[in-house]
Amino acid sequence: MTEPAPRLLFFADSLAFHGPSGPVPPSHPELFTTTCARLLGAEVDLVSRLGFTARDGWWALTKDPVVWGEYLPRADAVVLSLGHMDQLPAAMPTGLREVMPYLRPGGLRRSTRRAYLAAAPRVISWTGGRFSQLPPVVSNHYLSRMVSGIRYIRPDLPIVRLLPTPYDSELYPSKRPHPPAVAAAVAWCESEEIPGIVLDDLVLPGPNNPDGLHWGWQTHERVGARLAAAVERSLTNRAPDQ
Image (cartoon, rainbow, N blue to C red; front, side):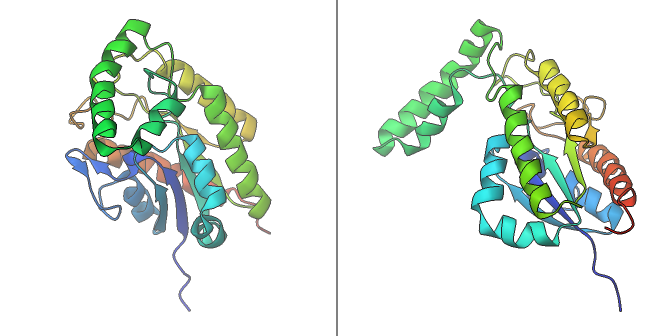
């Protein structure tokens, strides 16, 4: 009887479904998620949304019954591709920004959003990128909660993390938050004993999306290949009785 293909559970933001020209179906064969799965002969369960932060990942893990009741029990490894959005410089507290979609009436919501999009790059330039969407300590706090929850249910499950990606965007005209975010992520991986994949040498300057936040296909391929190697090592290093 043929063994079922291993399953990889990804928690990710829009990098998991964006190519060089914008969003694509999550099954697109050139995404880093599907590239990794193909190299391992695996299948993918994806928990992802535009702008997902580590806090959103925690909420998805604990509040979505499909995630904790279906995806997690059948997973052979978990990939945490979170923290990319968290590191981006902020023009206002994240809580205030996230209120905008709930404003009513619609005209007020649209005008507020237009004003925010116009002002945010100038505010970020003025503050020099001093503030981020989620400070590294907060991102790591929620990721640690995710790891604790996963290990409570599946103590044997390998976990791998992609560290925050470099970016170069006119919407976020400061790279100041990136180095401390990567340093904090490296320290977090060491404390949690989780393999961490540094992306700075993999993310090519082009051809990326015009927003400077997402990846071209060559970058997806490079990230997927390195991720597959890390996941394979984690699966191999599991104790035989697990």
